[in-house]
Length: 241
Image (cartoon, rainbow, N blue to C red; front, side):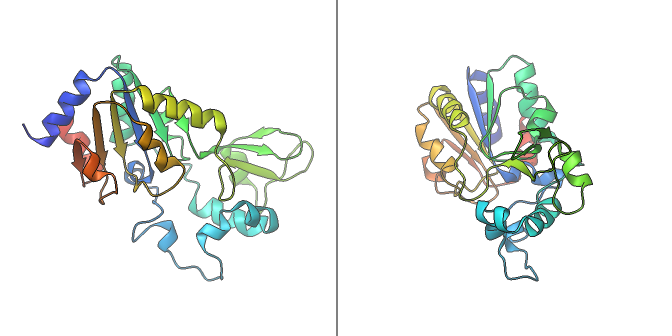
């Protein structure tokens, strides 16, 4: 039995599946990742700031104009659509499988594909709120404003509901994600280098039978896995449909 057939067999016989996703599942949708050779962190900037500095809480508070210039250009992709991988895992749920998505992505593509149980560890660009009055805004409102978007009710600055560096993850989301990982029998890790903590540390809570990694580059967890695919997620999906 080849690896693709083995993965298909595992999925077919699993009663509870958690799919833990990172940027690599969305790169086929045209959204760049962070750490690859062509990723956001590898791109040279004209100013003195690194991307890590810009998407920090301190930078957002002190330099909102520069933050939003970077944020709108590099982190918001309103025209991106779910690809075959997003749709495959959503379709598993539609077919009656117990599937939970735990994602580090902020692009909302799992939900657009039709997945219902999605725990967003790092928030979403599609949710934004006024820091003063709490009024909520969509991505379209933020992108339609030049410079720093302001609340149309009180005039205060709007903040993306995205976890920036120096900010903690949402406690409820953490608990739900860890609970799902602890109780599933199959954990499929897709498109993440597993180097971003604390999210990457959640994998240690897995107690099930089948641990699978699908990532172009090797990860520190590969030697602990039942199946490893160091290749493009779309190729894997095409071979297990």
